[in-house]
Image (tube, rainbow, N blue to C red; front, side):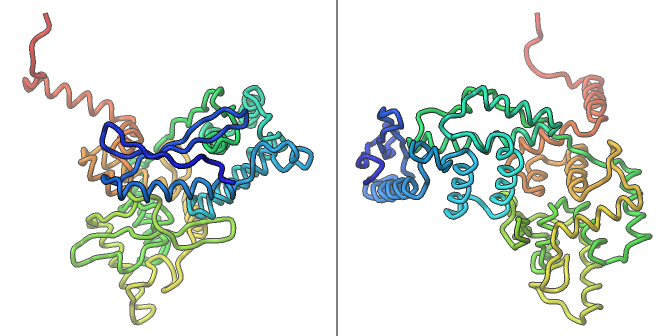
Length: 402
């Protein structure tokens, strides 16, 4: 039996077509869910909305029910089991990328199951959820970690509300934990010179780790993107670098995947130090193997890539050996080098749209919010520029205040 009533299609004032599916929630109250078609013509919109109707009913059939009373004794609808089943469902549908699925299952196992995993999914209330969040905070966890755990629980409750298995989302009555203010770390000029000197003194030019460090420093790539880089991505003729793939990490190993998101697939001109580093690596590979193929991995052994976790471990040993630290006195990571490039870009007044595209950020706002105030002398520089503008007679235009 279908969970939803027959599809209703109506034309909106905007001229678009909307599909409506009605259903009864667990209390017997009629509710509805809607979808607006992307098609302009009704003959095209109806098949799209009918397909949506099939997918919604299929989803309802495949997902375990959150409310059946007969399952309570068996514990089949505990928070642990319902969240686990939902993550499996998302993964099978392709809604979760493998590394994200693995990460969210770890979040479930570490931050939900030990605290609220045995609660019946439909019985937990605001007080219990707030106690859980307090317990996580008392453990000294980062604000971002608590936010991530809450977001996982919240998305599962939102799903079951949407399909009508439950009448309300208990997370709605809880103040969402803040993500925390991510501190975009960076290195000053002296620390950067120290890093490069250590590379020169302790690593072979053109070697795997030497190259990875330079690519992170001068290209701002994420570690998975560094490991996923192939020679066909390096366009030396035009001087451009293409980011087309990445290496993902999951609980059962590593694998090749698309970059983090759509904006992460990008193409940007190589600055001279980056180009020089990649050319050094190319010469080294040709010397070692007598040839080079376009599909070989830049950071790895010909057709075999260096796993991101292995690269990170080797880099950690290197920085600890040489006491390479950032501006805040913490040991540098590969991601620090990515932050460093973006911070320098903002500080040097690089066009933000271009910098955001180069970094693979989803928006210019993300670039500005994360890096605009990363350097403590940014405010001093801004004040200095403002003072110079007034000294040069460049006051803002407009009517004078009376």
